[in-house]
Length: 139
DNA sequence: ATGCATGAGCG
DNA sequence: GCTCATGCATA
Image (cartoon, rainbow, N blue to C red; front, top):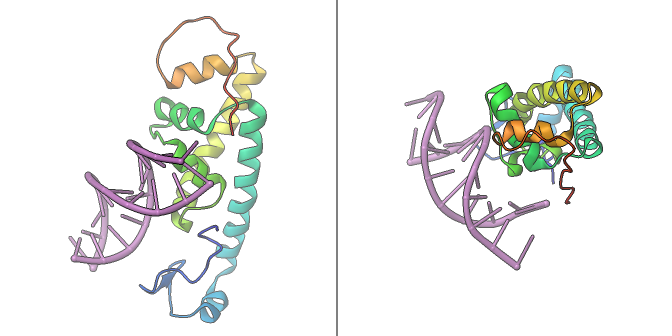
């Protein structure tokens, strides 16, 4: 399941930045900040997926859309793993703000009347300027 | 959605 | 070298 929930990470000895060997100790040493962040990430991942789906974007759409605007392009794989929390704690932390920003800006754009198709095109390349596109909804 | 491969970063 | 972040290929 989710990496960040499967606490006893590799035996190389570090869990959330804390050195230790067994799960018991790991749970004790988790800081409030760690758990808060963990919870935040969990919530956000669900929120993100929900928003993405409701907006009508594919995991691939989002990954590509991130490129031009946030200087970081990702594949469908990464988006999928993020939504499922199948990433390392730090990786999740890194991606969260980026995706959060994307959600905000996308929501604005949609409210301003920009079509989903137009937004997607910005991520790919300049195709046609005709709006009113439909975005593939596959799961 | 996920196993496997790879390149980057680090010690 | 090893770990980690990410992408590719896949049914």
